Length: 152
Image 1: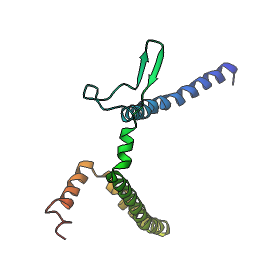
Image 2 (image 1 turned 180 degrees about the vertical axis):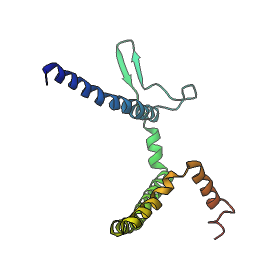
Image 3 (image 1 turned 120 degrees about the vertical axis):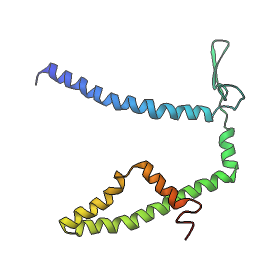
């Protein structure tokens, strides 16, 4: 390969890496910093509903004002701690149940005959083909006031 072809390939590698990086920067880091800015600003009754964090004073000095009242409020109110611990409990229980159900099914699939293996894999993949809206209606039927679960 010639030197110019190597340079061209190197430029394409850079472009291919930069595009996902820019995408993540735009749609992940930007909203993250916006939420962080709002959480560290003081609540005011205007539009936008938060104070400025960075201001120029006399055109030469930058002042940065961070307000941690929102974070103090979160740690003072026991509701947030209970909610967080409840979320962790739900995550642990669902992880345990997924392992308890998933490993035996995976073991059965691996140890089964090829025809049975295909049927088991089909039975596992089939729910992912179902429309989201159809699943929502199914959950509504199960969890409604007069639904299946409340009638048990």
